[in-house]
Length: 165
Image (cartoon, rainbow, N blue to C red; front, side):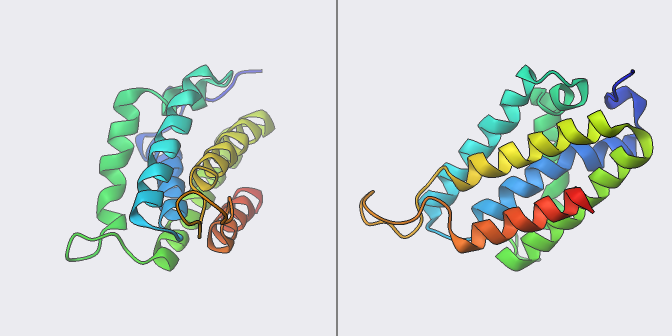
């Protein structure tokens, strides 16, 4: 069985598949917490995406190439910033990320097989968990708080549903 890779997709399809992990990182990191939490979570997300280089699936490995990570970050900027250059509201980012993940999953369903979709889903959910668990929400000097906030759980559930529908 031949697995999908970046070369087997059109440039538009590849952009959807490549950009979705970055959208997930941004949506979850913006879902709640402090600016420091958001920085920690984005760093964890970038590390999780980069760790895709160790994945068995060629499509996930292609997403994790440094030049592709940079291209994805540049590509999503226009969609995730408002007119004044600030990050959009968390609810808008969740909608944008969910739509992006759904479109990417649709590409994989139409162009690939079950193994391609499974590998991509596992990768996206791994990135989502890494981001959500990177900083405790509602803690005081590192004490107390929750590992994953309700808002982050909502984004993760929305992304998971988009991958499954």
